[in-house]
Length: 272
Ligand code: G1P
Image (tube, rainbow, N blue to C red; front, top):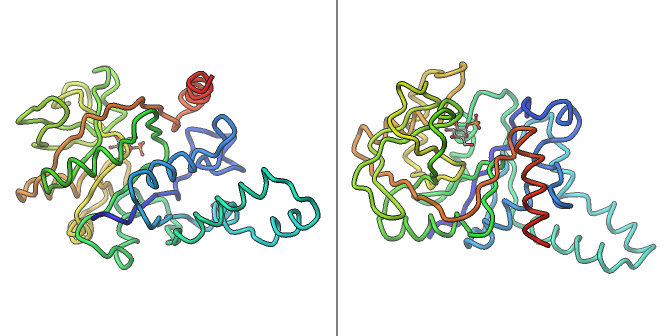
């Protein structure tokens, strides 16, 4: 059973500047709730018991958001606000499940994952990228089901417009089924001519703990960063099985300003 989820939160959020010069993008509210809480709710729904937050010393407000007991206790003592008491209870529940590790230099997702090596207990773990919200259907839960069936690593994927392939990690596929396929290869942000398909990696991964060894061997790739995609590529080359899960939910890209604005509108509309 997979019980631990890694959530990389140390990114600079440059695509959302100037907002992210003071607010971590993961705390930016979408329809009244921080982006990150949507991610935690999805993980809880999939049976995750422990969250590993990878933060940097510039993003300590994420820690404060979840660990601010004195502040809540003082207000609740003065004012018995039912809504606030309920919110605080929810935060207390998360509190018991969160561990922090630090990545002070933004050296890429691969480097972020490596920081968690000592904390990961099982053969597989979940990784969720908070820029990517998936609504309506629990994508992590779907992936855990596929992992149980195939006993392999899983990556969430969806078809994207061909002209946008250089924004994503792109998968080469084989043995195509209705809702999943075997991954033959992965390429990080290829140009349109080199893209092996238009199946993009969306930020959900079930990874094997042996990926840590693979990351250690990597040299910086695209943009000078250590990419998890490159470690996955090498594991596939060594015959480790990976499957792409073509998820059913609605994908919202919160990593760009345009996407963030649209996501808020879509979630609001979905709730009416
Ligand atoms: C990261 C991954 C990329 C993936 C994308 C999904 O890119 O490196 O493979 O397709 O997330 O959002 P980033 O958004 O950090 O540029």
